[in-house]
Each structure stands twice: as C-alpha cells, then as structure tokens.
Length: 292
View 1 (tube, rainbow, N blue to C red):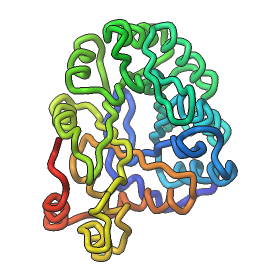
View 2: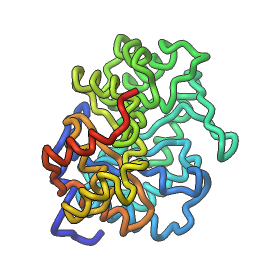
View 3: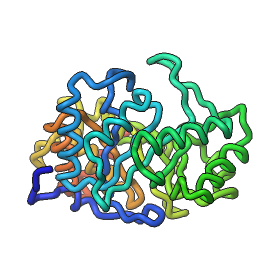
View 4: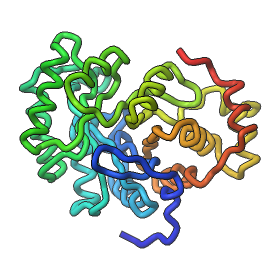
C-alpha cells in the first residue's frame, strides 16, 4: 500500500472497543458489493483500491457482514488487505439469510449462527473475529439461545468481542444481562434520530454506538438546507458536514461510511478534520427531525 503522510481519520479521536482502541471514523464494507448488497461490485479493482486507500488514510475499524454479497464483502476484504495491518479491527455480523436481493430474513438458530461464524473465520482468513455481531435478532428464537451461542463462541476463542445490530432497547437490556456487549449498531443520522434512546443508553453504559446510513441527510442537504449552507462555510460538502455532526454529536458514536470509490473514501475520511461551531451544530439541530 502507498504511504500517505496525512491520515485524516486520526483527527476523529479514539474509542475503546472492548480490548481494542480504534479511531472513531471507520469504514462500512457493504458497498464492496453490487446493488442492494448483492453480488460483486461493478468495478472490483476500484473497490479494492478504495478499501486500501481507507487504510492509508488512517481507518483501523472496518464493519462487514456475511450477508453482504453474500460473503463477497468479506472475501474482497481478505483479497485487498490480507495479511492485515496489526492495528486493524474487523467486525462482521451473522443472523440474516438472503433468499434474494430484496430479502433480509433473520435466522437466529444457534447452529446457524455458529455455522456463519465458522464461514466468516474462513472467508476473512482469521483465527478469531474481533467483533462479532448479531445482524438482527430472530423473534422466533429466545434471545437467551442466540446470545448463549455468542457466549460459547467467545469461550472457544473464535470471537473476541460481541455486539448487536438492529436491536430494540428492550432487546439490548435483555442481552446485557447475559453477556458483555461492546457495541450497538443502528440506523442513525442527522436526518434520522429515531434511535436517540439507544444512543443515550450507550452513553450511559459506555458502549460504542455504530450508526449505519450515517450520511443520510434528506432535505437538510438541499440547496437551502443547513448542511449545504454550513458546507460552504467550512469548505466541505454536505456529506462531510453530516459526518462531522455525528462525530461531535456524541463521544460514543463511531460512524462507518462506506464507498467503493477512492474519491468518495477520501472525501469521507477528510470529514474527520471538520470542526463545527456551537452555532452550526445548533442550526442543524434546529432543522433536524425530532427523535422518535
């Protein structure tokens, strides 16, 4: 990989993710696949260059899932980065099946979670998964059975840290009574704050809050919207302002913007260097939708 003197991601600050310390601006690897996270990316070579460039820019936390592709995201990460940098933390997820590009079906049977863990270990070429997350809890399987599988995988040394994705606050509270969680991953952005209650829970408990779709800005990025206006003031783009807002919104937030484009990866990473004033943060909040 080429050496890059300026590593803007290091400006995002750090967070203790279980036993790992990572910079707070990560990389979401869902975009290393085709449309709707199905099949290969349109330009595989560019996708490989993009994820390598993210590392060059200081990214040391990558989030993927077995269902992205399926498995294509994990395999492409291995092709692009193996042998992995010593400080790189890779998180993956299991618990969804993909019968078709439009279907995401939760499956939480213990034997299925274990099977997918084994496949991810092989596809990533690692002996232990740094952060293993249940992609979505299966409402037809007791939480104790699903979490119990994660606990057993930890005991066997196949999983180091555990997190949940797309879970309700009630689910999270039940899970934390059974296992030590280090992260929660939910949809959250400047234009979608329906999971504000879980963010506050993470702040109180010291858990990482990993927002997916972090650059969803909606009408706030329109020509007359606050993100566009502020982007002009700070010399950035609305997407960069949306990421900067997340980084300043809470110390526990770890955004994971993703792209299979070198140019967009660089733009995302440079958002770590943008500092919004109190007035700019307040202006964004003034126009943002209320928490759900």
